Length: 389
Image (tube, rainbow, N blue to C red; front, side, top):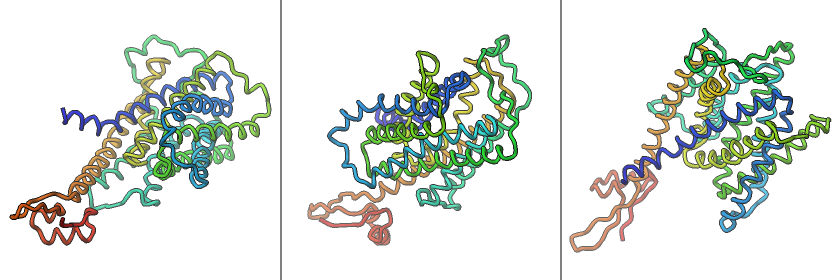
């Protein structure tokens, strides 16, 4: 029973991140239908985070009313920047880049996220590079392979894969397959689109890094998520007023646009932000971002079932490479976690008995009767020191 409980506790971050990718995949399908129907992506960002705020605010108000930390100007500024990075810069810049370049290029470029997050984590000393250790080599190798697989999946099409459940099904009207839109941008548009997608991806990676720091100071995670969504909504409204001058773009009815905004807000903003924050707090930003390419595989499978989209050999090969890369990254993180747990156990004091019956509490290394271990512990190795009572 204890083994099952320990296994489930360790498996929670993996289950959470995989579940989030399914949520993101569903959002992509609904958003695709909505945007093809003419909805402004600026307005969609506003409604999405308005729904997210309304969905999670009641839980934050009641559950965390007694444990909510005091708001300071420093924390407020961090939340303001988080809202700017996620709801505003990432989403809007990505959509503009998508418009200027094309879905294939935009999707491929955005999959530099794990590598960019890993590099930023190293720069800010949140990840240590120890090239002599296999676990570190695995994380570096896995990050590179994951990005390569994602780019292979989008840049190489290959022959059509004839799947039993897609035969005889026509493409639904109003929904085009990924990459079907003919985009012939000018050199200037291609450069600007590439720049916007890089900025969006950099903002996404920066959000992972800053969120890791903010959660340590503002531990009320539901309240943090609510504030990010609320401030992001206000910021997105300001951006929309600048970019969209037509009042008609704000019109929304009981249709696919409303469903897309509500789903994106409730599932992929409020719930996703909260769960993502929990996972980042426990495992770090690189672990969380390493799952993002997995969404491409889920979208391909969901699209073939729900939208009868065609699957090509490039997508299958890319999926295999991504799985290999993800396994390498997660194996490296697993080994790192095991080492940290072993160091923590080594630092714990243990009790022993003297011949006269008095209890002695000493470091784990000293308990084994090793004087060198005692000196190592007292010098800070493992974070502990010996003491006698």
